[in-house]
Amino acid sequence: MRITSGFLRNRRFQVPDQEVRPTMEAVREAVFSSLGSVEGLDVLDLFAGSGALGMEAWSRGAESVTFVEQHSNVWKNLQRNLEELSHPDLGSTQVIKSDAVRFLKRAGGPYDLILADPPYDLPDAMENTLAGIAGHSVLKPDGILVYEMRAKGDPAVSKDWKVLRDKRYGKTRVLILKLNTEDAS
Image (cartoon, rainbow, N blue to C red):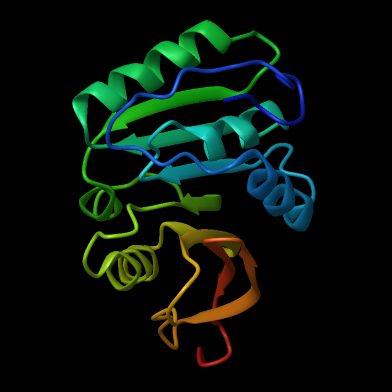
């Protein structure tokens, strides 16, 4: 795999053979085109896997990227990739070995941008992730959540969230969400 844009454009990184489904290059390009600039943002990459989404943000000028991955081999691979790609002109990175939803209960932050790409077959992943972010003030009030999922089926988006964009890319669906502040008084 390779990074599509920014400081690390065209740099390659290793993807572990098991337990990951990296976001395809064309999808990453489309997502970041939709988001616009991520320069200076604090980013959280949940269910990081290969780290493709977070590394894309890092390459494009994010101030910091926190990667959360629970599988040991995948976590070690991600750490190696970040060490090999590291450069003083890039923002800071942190790789945390944890279940993503459990991490939200103790996460620092808040973050400007959260990237979530859970395994497609993880039960209740969307519901638990959205509730964890909304319930623990992990996202800044004007922050954005990018949620990647299987294209088929209807997303379980609670009333706490506003869907800004819902786009399919082949077998992948990407939702861009913002916390719904209309009900807050």
